Every structure is written in structure tokens, then in C-alpha cells.
Image 1 (cartoon, rainbow, N blue to C red):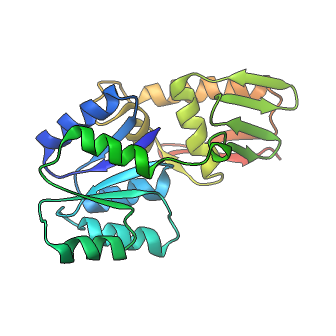
Image 2: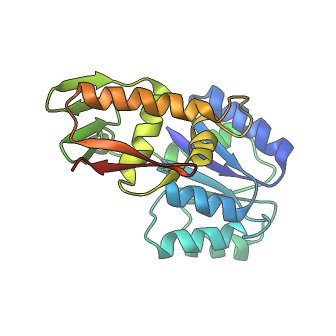
Amino acid sequence: MRLLYAEDEKSLARAVSTILTRNNYSVDVVYDGQSALDYLETGNYDGAVLDVMMPKLDGIEVLRRMRERGDSTPVLMLTAKSEIDDRVTGLDSGANDYLTKPFDMKELLARIRAMTRVPSVQQNKTLSFGQVTLDCASYDLSGPKGSRKLAGKEFQMMEMLMRSPGKLISTETFMDRVWGYDSEAELNIVWVYISMLRKELRAVGADVEIKTQRGVGYFLEICP
């Protein structure tokens, strides 16, 4: 399950991210509201944990803009404030839950589990573009000539491409979303994985291909 965690207190962000990762969550961490909004726009998350007090945009404003553009991602708001009015403002803006700092990690995990709990019929989602499908539960990429099971990072990159077909995704975005801020991997690793995905698409007889805009990024389009 994939989460976005937005918290400007970096030591806390690192600690919480570590615990979430140990509990089998895939976590992207950002440190300001504008970055949170950008990540939510380009990615696919099962849930978001937003601190209220952040630079650039506060958590409430991020939440409002999410809901205005139709983003229904479940959101848990974190704040150091405990006044009823603050909780009401967050919930009225579209938050699914609210937790006051300091919090116990067991409670945070329980609240995340509760807000991201979905009916089983929704868990086995598939993405389709052209004659290609991607099963988000099994990581199977399928086309006219069969199926191939993708490895973790291959799946994450393919999922990003298939959720926004035709939309350019920069190398830096792939690095941040798949390898993370603290990764020591070099930018050329993205090209290596793109090459692997192109081979997988050919293997399943795909009628779509990953195109390159040199020096900028990659996008998915149907073959002419």
C-alpha cells in the first residue's frame, strides 16, 4: 500500500517513514505543502498523511485543492493544535480523520489502516491502455501475446505511465517516486528500467510504446 507523508519536521518525518516502511507501506516523504500537492497530482496513493502546519501551503489548503480537483484519496491530518475548531475545519475541508501531535505510532497505524480499508472488490484493480493491461494486485503486464510479471520498481514505473498515458513524466519524478529522496542511485538507472519495460511491452505484443522526450522524460502512447 502506498502513502504520501507530508511533514516539515524532517527528523519526525524520517522516524515515522521508517516505521511505516517496516509495516509494509511504500512511503513517499515531502516537506512542504506545494510538494505534497504536486506528488498527489502525478501519483496514485492509497492514502495521504498531511501535517497542518507546513511551508508554502498548509495542510488544510492542500486538502482543499485536492478535493476541488476531484481527488478522493483518503487523508489523515496531523496537527500540534488540539482545539475543536481546528479539527472541524480539517474535517469540513474533506479530511477522513484527524490526529493530534504528539501521537502514539500504534494509533497512527490503526488510523491509517482504518481510512485505507476498502472493499475487496476494489483491491484487484487493473489499468488498461490500448491492448495492454496492468494488474495492480499481481503486477502482471498483459497484451495480445501473453503476460509478464513485473518486478517492484518496473511495476511502479509502469503504473505511473499507465495512470497518465500521454503525460510526460520527468526522470527526476521517477527517481523521487520510485527510488526516493535518500537514494544514492544515479539518474541513468531510470533509462535502464525504461529499457527493461520496453522489452516487456514487446514480449507481450503491446500496441503501446514508451516514448522519450530527450533530456526531459518519458510518456506512453499507442503505436502508430
